Amino acid sequence: MAEHPKTATQNSTAAYIRGLAAQHDVTHVQTQSDLLGQHMTRLADDAIQPDEIERMLLALHRAGHLDRRELVHLQVKYLREVRP
Image (cartoon, rainbow, N blue to C red):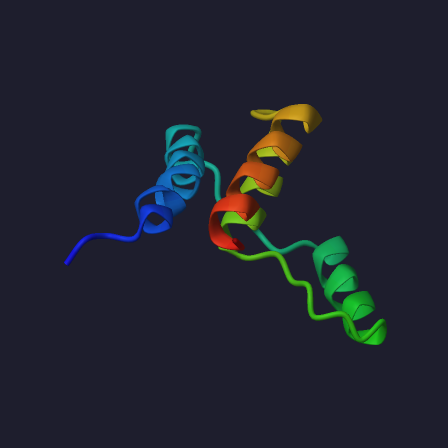
């Protein structure tokens, strides 16, 4: 069975982000501001929650391995791949 074209690229940005996190030995650790953000989204009745990859991006940014422009670029690319 032929693979859907979107499936072939879906994991490319996620794999890159995971590899970058592994290369820099970065993992996401939930902080007080993360907890507050989750609480605020619940109060706003907003279902948006960062997934594992988005949390890794934030961790890479906080650790100084990505600047804001790179963070936004990778997040947009990732979201375009997983949310067609």
